Structures are given as structure tokens and as C-alpha cells.
Image (cartoon, rainbow, N blue to C red):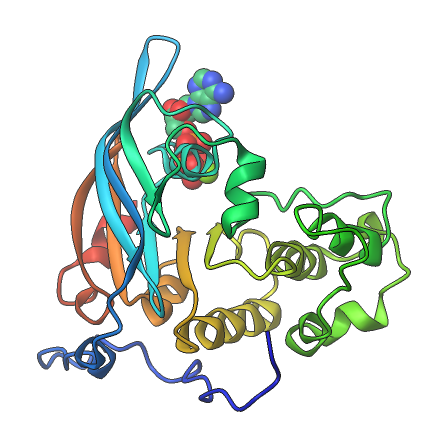
Length: 267
Ligand SMILES: Nc1ncnc2c1ncn2[C@@H]1O[C@H](COP(=O)(O)OP(=O)(O)OP(=O)(O)O)[C@@H](O)[C@H]1O
Ligand SMILES: [Mg+2]
């Protein structure tokens, strides 16, 4: 991760589908050919005991793009990310990452290959300091690998709080720490599970800006699980809507409003 010139984030602009009523503009980034699928999921099924939780899921996540996964409580979003992370073993289907089949790989191996994961509820280590938490994100790297200074440019508050215990941070600061920890090893795929849950608006904005900037570099794919529609719509390059373990709708982020996704998310 270098500190060279990256395109400025467009975060803060109105969502690309807009709600002005007119037809959505095609996303110009779609025309640039940034379409390398770094993650390919095919025919994924998952069960907890006798309950069929994920049903035949298939999608791709591409470098330079934010793939948003939307769905109400209990539809299987976290189970999907846990399956992709190897936290729960995949029953049937395949997961290909960066050209290799990782369907049966251990979580550790997935991290080593370049998948970063920000779990729902953050799961930072409350008794460890911010610095120690960040070092946990380097566990897959050779000993002595320094914490990339860029993490402190993305989240300046972490530098100020470097010796503070994780458990003493605010919820928003903990979320930033969890994202920084996932970024420490320089992943090619970053998966975030509801990063806005219980977070104050100003920090949600900061997190959105970072997600957009990371995607815009074109060297990382981002899978963002969300229930906060406006946040999701602002960031989505492509979207998937889940219901009862299935993907029931998908499309371009720019079309979310026109496709009526907002309605699917409310009540
Ligand atoms: N360890 C488990 N054992 C049995 N059932 C589980 C387990 N974890 C989740 N479930 C069930 O699987 C379904 C999907 O849960 P999951 O946590 O993946 O949903 P979600 O979309 O992430 O929900 P939320 O938006 O509330 O986080 C739910 O019905 C849930 O009750
Ligand atoms: Mg969940």
C-alpha cells in the first residue's frame, strides 16, 4: 500500500441512481473495463442442522467494485460471509478466489491468500491495545512485518489512540479499528458485515469515504453487507438482494432506486 496519488473519493455526492425521477445514468466506471472477477461463488448451499440457510447462491465480485449484499434480518447475509471466510464449512458449491479454488480452505489460508474480513459486531479484542489489535491483522505475515502507516492516514483516530485498550474505544472507533485490522495484511478482497450498525453518522461518512477510495484504486474488491439503504446505494457498483437464503434480485448500483430496492428493504 503506497501513499501515491489516488483518485479523490466521490463519497458525499448524491447516490448514482438519484431519486430525481429520470432514468439512471450508466456508471462510467462500467465502461472502463475494470471487470476482473477476483471472487467467484457458484451454487453455494449452506445448512445449520436441518435448516437450509443459503440456497444456490452465485455471484462475482470484481476488483475496483463495491458489491453490496442487502437483505433484512435473518436472510443469511452473515452466514454467506462466514461461508466465504471458511468459518462455517461449505456444504455444496464452489468458491474461487484469485484464480484458486478455496472452497475447502481454512480461514487462515483465506486470510493468507488475501481476504480481509470485518465481522458483524466488530469483534475487536477489548483487552488488547489498538496497536496489538492491528498486529493481530498481521498474523498471516512474517514476524516483524510493520503495521502499514497508511492505516493511520485512513483512520487518524487510531494513531491518537494507539495505546488505548480496544474495549475503551467508542463503537465507531472500534469499527474503524476492525476495518484497519482487516486491511493490515493488504487484502485483495475486503468483506464487511454491516459496518454502520450502531455507529454515529459522522463516522459512517468517514467509513464510506474509505470504502469508496479503496475500491477506486482498482486493486481490491469489496463485498459490503448492509441494511442501511442510503449508505449501500451510495457505494454500490453492483447489488444483490437476499431473501430467505436466496438472491432474489441483482443489478447495477446505479439502478438500485429505479429497481425499487429501497421498498424491499423497508418493512
Ligand atoms: N449458528 C447457528 N445455528 C443455527 N442457526 C443459525 C446460526 N446462525 C444463524 N442461524 C440462523 O440462520 C439464519 C441466517 O442467519 P444470518 O445471521 O446469516 O442472517 P443475517 O442476514 O446476517 O441477519 P442480520 O441482518 O440479523 O445480521 C437465521 O435464521 C438464523 O437464525
Ligand atoms: Mg448478520
